[in-house]
Amino acid sequence: MGEQPQDAPDQPAFGTLVVNVNRYGSPRRSKVNVMVDGVRMVNAEGPNAFTLPPGRHMVSCEVNAAGRTFGQADMALDLGPGQVTHVFFTGPAGLNAPGVLAYQPVGHPGRATRLACLLPALIICLGSVALIIGLAVYMTRR
Image (cartoon, rainbow, N blue to C red; front, top):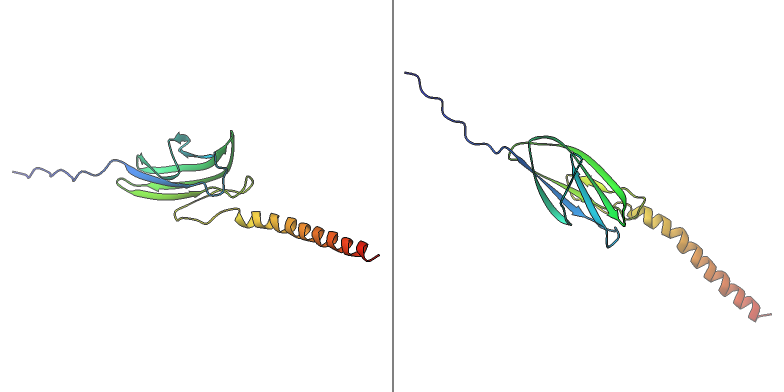
């Protein structure tokens, strides 16, 4: 007589996606929207775990402040059965900078842009102060 086939060991039918959310420089009352395959997920700052079927998934994150969204970042990823995949979203430093979504924690997007915008303003302010002091000295010597 033939042997009965043995049952294959149970494999998990789902995988886990963990989206780690860091708002960074976003407004204090803002929140991050996490969408997986176009569906908004419940989330909070820090790690957020979602159980999903295996396959390719589209992950999108964006910052929402006062009804305005900005800093969107997207990523397509493949999730296997029983697999745990971590991704990291860092919100932008400003309204016009993009957010970053990656497999590793990232720095602070938009920081260089913010500094580049502040530098000319600082130079103008210091120049104005020097001009006022120079005029004051000139006027007192007349």
